[in-house]
Image 1: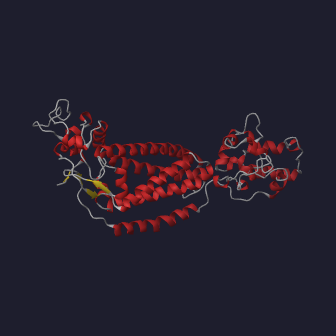
Image 2: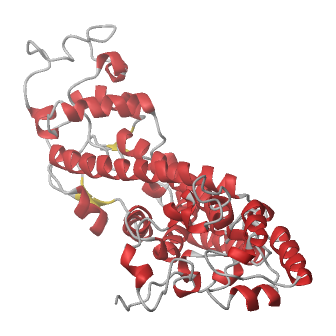
Image 3: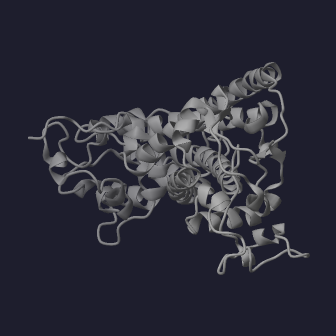
Amino acid sequence: MTRHVRPQEACALAAEMPAPQAGEVVVWDRAVRLFHWLLAAAVFAALATGLVAPRPWLDAHVVLGTAAAVLVVFRLVWGVLGPTYARFASFPPDPRAALAHAGGMLRGRTIHDAVSGRSLRDPGNELAENPGPEGGFSASGMRFSGLISRNPHFIGHNPLGAMMVATLLVVIVALTVTGVVMLGGLAKEGPLAAATSFAAGASARDIHAALGWLILALAVLHIAGVLIEGRREGQSLVWGMVTGRKAAMPGAVTAPERAARPRLAAAILATLAVVLVPAIVMASRQPAAGVPTAPLDPLYVHECGACHSPHHPSIAPSATWAGIVEHLTAHFEEDASLSEADTARLAAYLADNSAERFDTKAANLLRTPSADAPLRITATAGWTRLHRGVPANVFTTRAVGGALNCSACHADAETGHFAARAIALPKETH
């Protein structure tokens, strides 16, 4: 007969477990299994598009991150209203129990060894060296200072698995939050774009990247733990998450049976969708903070566009524009002089729409002029950083026609947005 046991007591009870017997029980319901594999696919694909893929893959990364967030919301609801082993109550996280279980795994003993191997009284057996108050074997062996070498069989998640589940869910929530802040601050998109600065987005980006590497490490540890525990138990836990079944034995650690409440779960999820989706859409449609909205001045387009694409003034600071206007008679070895009235109008327009006036990524990165060539936008450290992955020969092709022809690669160059999705390098390379 199975017993309902707290994780802290489980290892002490392992000494009483009889030899394994054939039999399987249904542990993971379809919803949990589908969630598990969909989340794994979404997380690994998001890692690939976020850590490896080029910037134009940002849209795919956002979709995958959103999918992971939606799956986590479902799991949180199902963790309260699902069947027995889907419920968080069946595997409460316990760091001490998790450490004890990990210690047993690292000692390499299998369930078969634990229940039919050496006697508890054999010399060297750690349980024999840690007897209970009356010569028995107490649950005190679960303490970190006295890890025992055998672990019991858990029908659901073992203590180490419970800690991993809780940690992964917390990290994915943190990734979602930092991702939304990063999207709003750097890309000026999403529900927080109207209230998030570039500086906040940059800070969120650093945290988001660190969390990405963390969840990759956690995933590797999770896979390793599943394989080791499966070997210890003599069954494939990976296949168990496909079929929903696990081998069981008398004395296994179980949880009290609880019936699923799918209708209530569906109602809660539907309510969340009805409330959150419109709110997110409406927030995403609000004007982003610090993004240019006015069209380019016709005089600026006419005069500057005669020689190169009229990039938005927000890609250079006011000092750079003032220097350019002041030297129009010798504008990069050409005479671009204008009438006094047009010069004054152009100077005022450029000053009012310079990099200091906006909070886009381009405005922030191109705000500091080069000390060696203060009037050259392409000489700034920001421009070099933004284009470090672009082959130098691209700028000499006929399709591009020079580093100042921003519109050749950036479809939204005139708006000053310079979104990642709007980048497309011309196919022509000669």
